[in-house]
Image (cartoon, rainbow, N blue to C red):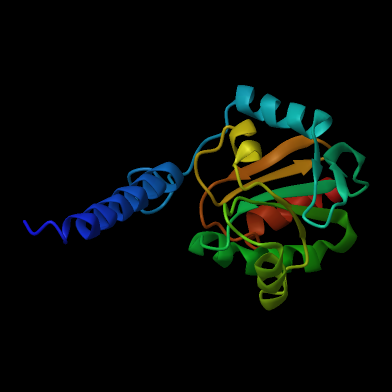
Length: 184
């Protein structure tokens, strides 16, 4: 092999291996994350995080989930490069519109290298009306013991009532009925 091509081949090999590693980390061995059934220990863990953790939003505002006055808090783990995450935004917006001030959506953005300028441009372009915590090292994602995005945890008064890690829409009857019944 020509010695001039060796660095090029090494670079391409590194890129391919890196891409495969990222795919395996975020999506496992399939293209879509497999739905995960939330066990009681994991549910208790999520509820513990809800009551104790404090975070800072991308805009500097402090977040303590327990202090939100809304009866429902949705934590949405997402990234700008995650196509299933982007597809969920539309249904989350509709859910917010339907329930108004009864639901607070907080995003956890796991983009590793996203400048504040690009982040704000993305938010504006996609008309996202929920605030996000920036988690470039995936520390929060790890704290929740999540390996895949998108992932959504819906709390009602601090108790987990819904979890999904797939492309589920949040406008279907089951979710809307569940939220509506808990508001009565």
